Length: 90
Image (cartoon, rainbow, N blue to C red):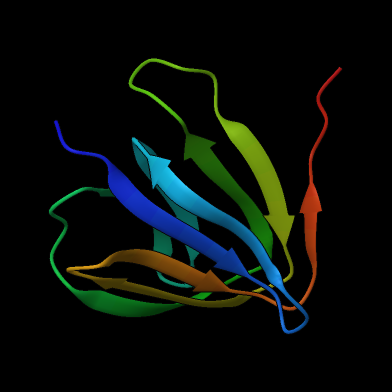
């Protein structure tokens, strides 16, 4: 399967940009997963954790966001959020 282009952006800088397998986003209407070829959409994001899967079957990288916006287009997924923090699991 093709890779999804993913960008994570704060008001100050671009945090991450590149190909991933899948991203699970905490939308205000419920969590949703985005793979390459997803239908175009926009959603607000509630505070929570974004799960970024680099490859199929990989453990997700978890990133906490305080809310924001997600846009899925032919170009990929862009997430805009004010406060972004990597979550470290013990």
